[in-house]
Image 1 (tube, rainbow, N blue to C red):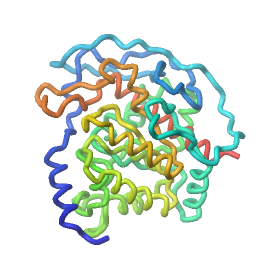
Image 2 (cartoon, helix red, strand yellow):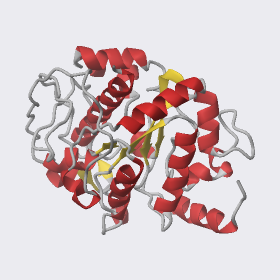
Image 3 (cartoon, one colour):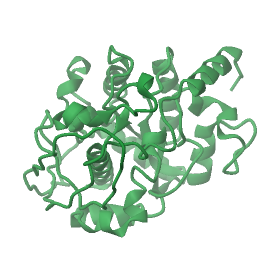
Image 4 (cartoon, helix red, strand yellow):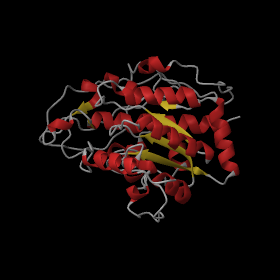
Length: 333
C-alpha cells in the first residue's frame, strides 16, 4: 500500500486530539459501582429501542472524585431459546436512516455465513476473534474482563459461558489494532503499531493482526476519534477483512462528539451496503443517564465521551451477546 503524506498528517492530528486515555476508569463517576443482579437470557433480537438491558454479575469498582448519577434500574430481557435451524435472511433489510431504532443485537444475513466459510478454507482460526478499537475497547475495560475476572464471567448464561470457552484466549489480549487513540485510518498506517507485536515495518496494524491472530470474526469499533475520511478508511478495512474471509461486526458508539452523528450513520450505511451485522451499542446506552457518558473533570473540553461503570457493563455484555449470536448463526445448520 503506497504511503501518503496526507494520511500521515491526518493520523498525527488525530493522535494529538485523542479523546481516550489509558486511565479511562480513573475518573469515572462515583456511585456507579457494578452491582450484582440476577441475569436472565437475552432474546436473539432485542427490542429495537433499548428499554431493557440485561446486566452481568459484576466486580466491585470504587471510583472517586467524580459527579454522582441517579441509580441505574436493572431490567432484564425476556428469556428465549435460539432457533439455530432458522434460515438467515438474504440481506440486511433495514433503512440506514433509521439506525437509532435498529436492534441492539444484530441481524445476521446469509452473506456473513459465506464470508466465514470462505475464511475457514483460508485457514482462519474458528476460535479466534479480534477487535479494532480505541481505549474503550481495551481488555481491562471491555471483553478482557471476562477472562481476567472470574466473578464477571460467573453470572453469565450457559450459552455465553460456552462462547467464552470457545473463544478463550481472544478476550484478554493486546493487539496492534487495539490501542488508545486508534482511528479507522490508523488501522491502515504501518507506523501505528510502532513495530511491536512482531509486526513488519511495512505491515499495517490490520495486516499484522490478521497474520498473527488469524481471527474468524472482527469487531470494528472505532469512531470516537473520527476523521473526515472515516467512511473511506472503513471501506478499505472492510474490503480487506472480507477478502481475508474474516467476518466484520460493525458497532455504533454511545457518544456524538462529532455533533451530527455521522460516524454511527456511516456504520449503518456500510452495514446495509455490505450486508454485515451491526451491534447497536448506541441503542443499548439509550436507557442510561446521559447515555452512560461523562466528561472527565481534568479534560472537560473533550466532552462526554467516557463510559460510566454502568455503561461499561452493558458495553461488554451486549458485545458478548453479539459475538455469540453471529458465531451461532454462521456455524448453525
